[in-house]
Image 1: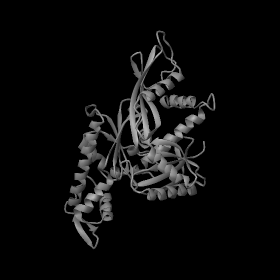
Image 2: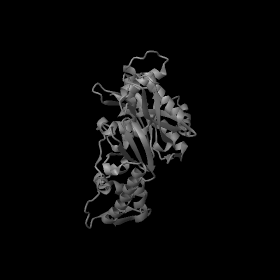
Image 3: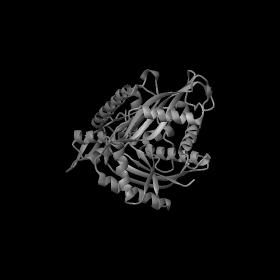
Image 4: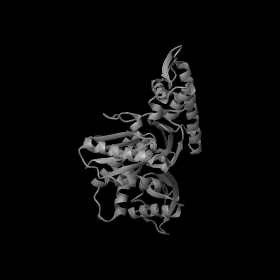
Length: 399
């Protein structure tokens, strides 16, 4: 299978990964390109020219390192540019029962899409069944081959803002690169980080980035809810800079050195202002950072409640992103504040082995495995896209 390139656009950086699946089902990275870029926020573009320059830069870096020409990419879509719609549907076979076929699953998905209200200025990128209901029994398994009088399903439809696709297409047109497919960035992360058996019941993924925190609910192989909070790692440094009257760069360094729940005693730090250096008590830094962390934890809790997460059922929760996890002791702090068992399970990689690259690796993981399923499964007809979709869907649900 030829190498695949993914372009991941976040709130503070742009990443291009070019990789392939190894013989042992791991991922081999052939080329990497990264660039700092703060050009999107809360579903809006804030600096299209900077984004243009960053995308061109990372693609050229990845090409040079991989010694290959990138002609198409898989594009991640940040949560702010996405909408998720759920739609239930029932397909009846009349008075007599019969065997469920692949075409019936396709019809279910199409009927589910047709009956729902579509968001304006958005295009569909994913349609994934959450579960099927056959003779009163619910299951995530495709019911193909089962004899029944009717089948029902709940389908998750993911839509992307057209402006996002059009903007990135215009940028890529300058270097003759096309968008091969779009990937919900949180879906890729969730499928990579959270094991299949932990997604049997709804699980939660929290990605604390630099400027925002994204939360998604995943059940089986489909996202059922998605939300964002406009608070991330940037706000920690911003609070320090404002509260201590120091430069943002100096505040950022102090944030990175900070350790949660550590007794600093009378220790101090030397930080820079615009004109001089000043000595600041570590206890003051701790007070500011932990206050912001507590606020973020409370916002996360409130958002999970809004997303109808059953907190009392102790849901499985995973944490990713570099906005918080790169601060030592932050995971334990969040566990105590939320009173939840929160897991961090970023797979080890020989390069970019850091939680702030989890979104890019999740997208590459998703695309590579989807491509392998497509390549390994024969198609009845090269022009039958519905058949290809159903084959991939069946393999995806029964992997």
